Image (tube, rainbow, N blue to C red; front, side, top):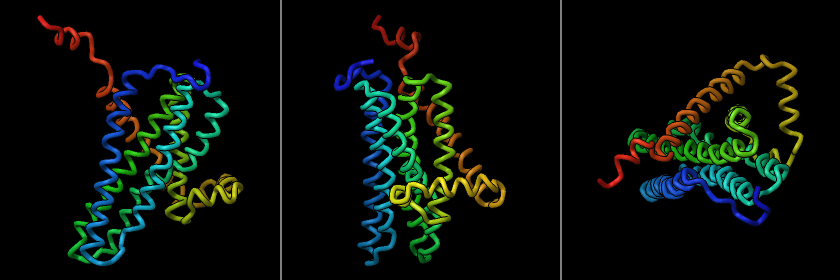
Length: 243
């Protein structure tokens, strides 16, 4: 492991992935914010401007994941990574939470309903993309530090925790700042749920379905992304050689 302050060489696959993400993610966010701006100017009402704040929160886990990846490359101790990863996990639900904002399409009038559905859809795509990219970065670090099997277990647990966070945000109207202001909030809620795990069927259903959908989506994105950014096969390299 490299000493603190010296960057380890970046894998070619990681470099290609980061270049694609650095181009597409800001572009997607700009499209979503542009649609909100257009709606405000067209209607004269600030409807959906709150989505800009939700999008800013969705960027938080990506920023923290980037910090984790950079710390890993500089040889930071595992304990320091765990501290930042805890913050990442706390903010991670803010990214896929954007998908649940689809419920707000009902506030649109008939003329704007299709436009609003498209607008909310772009924010949902942003949330999924930001969440999966940040998860991928943490996954890469976990795999280097702990091995492939442990890394997948950590990612699965993180996704399940994210589904719980989405429930807490959408149904109980809590947010990441509440957990920072009251560090015992989440432990109290978890204790109440563990004491009666099936006492809230809505919670069980939402978290279970959310966990499965998010994990399957991430797994598909993970393997698809590795195929797209991975090195060319020996056969492909042979074909590319000049005759």
